[in-house]
Length: 83
Image (cartoon, helix red, strand yellow):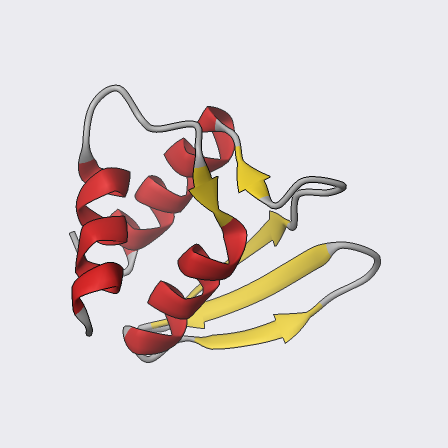
């Protein structure tokens, strides 16, 4: 993981969750952690990491992830034994 990905991971772990994370940065973090990321139906994105599956909704028209999604990402990473 590079410095930016480490910063994104720390932001996801922070409380309260941030509301200004860029989806592309989150997806880059998933890939750096060894996850398989694939496009689902519409704007859904499937992620598989350490045997744990999750589906996220890629934000649009803006590329910023809201706090609810950050909480879901945090739970996913916790279940995948990353944090």
